[in-house]
Image 1 (tube, rainbow, N blue to C red):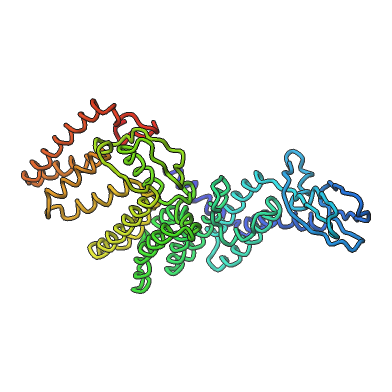
Image 2: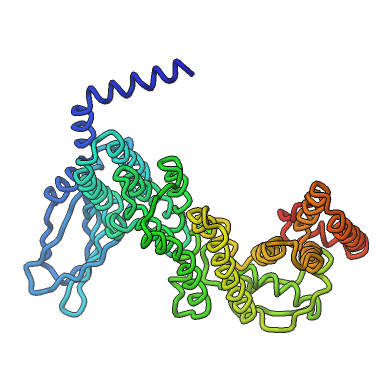
Length: 479
């Protein structure tokens, strides 16, 4: 450990001693894509179109067309992958037309420009260059932050126009994952990390608050990363002013209110999808609630249908929960009632949050972080049955000394439906013994016996639904 500390101190001294030369070298590296792009743009070969009777194709590295006639050129852009390793000479083909297909139509020339691109090279250089920018943020003084931000825009503009020339350049300013599901959202990780590095370096409360709002409503994939790094910076000790504190505490209320509204009206599809993590995105409202209600509906209708959403082709099968999942009945419309259920549970979450804000006054700074944590955002976005179970459990455990038997019975019901809340009953029994509250222990013990009897009855006499599921990678904690 001592050797590691010495090596670290030596490295820091070396960087500090040679910081000027390191900065100059890294700046040249970061500006090189922009210089290459400018060189490629200035080196284009011009082809003249003088015969409107021919349809033609031009190919090369850095080409363009002009017309001596009165025809207007109508341009469309596409990309064509260019190999740059080991063919380094092809670097001159990046960001400029390498193929032009044109034709004459109604007094105009229709031309498709295929621009040289290389997305694989972009991914590596994007990561390397932006990590270099983050390094510059860390090792330089705050007064140089504006210069590094300018360098950030110049570098990213250069690699966008050079390697992925038809991608929207606005992604540099607003690095937000697209609505489509795919691997391209990964490219925004390091850009958002740069934003976080700038905020941590400047260490301003307003900036932390603004960035928190940005991640919650615009780029929620990286909220967890921001909180994680912020914890190591100041242990989440913001010391907000009264106005800042009120704004911070209101963010979860606004977030889940927007989710309720966007969940009801399809007009707000893009808002709905943007409030969920990219990997789980979909326009279906409360997809897990649809699945839950569908399987319950199967108990009374062997051939139910879902008319919209993600599970259009789903068929009846064993739900794989507890004994109650084959006893419950549902005859309503799955799509409508999943929205109603999702709306009500989200509203209940807001009420629980408000109660927590009043009760945990000394820990209020952690409440928005908990209620906007990735697991809770995902569960509420999907309307997962675990989310419903969580809300019931929170109600039951909140001051369990009041209406104890009723609350224990609620926990028994959700345990019979989805099994894993049984651990709550076991925990209550253990605490009751420790607190010498034998009345609660006896009540809990009796309910555990009832659960055990119904569990094994369902296991042996109900086609083993607990262990046999339509998705064999789920086991609700049993396997």
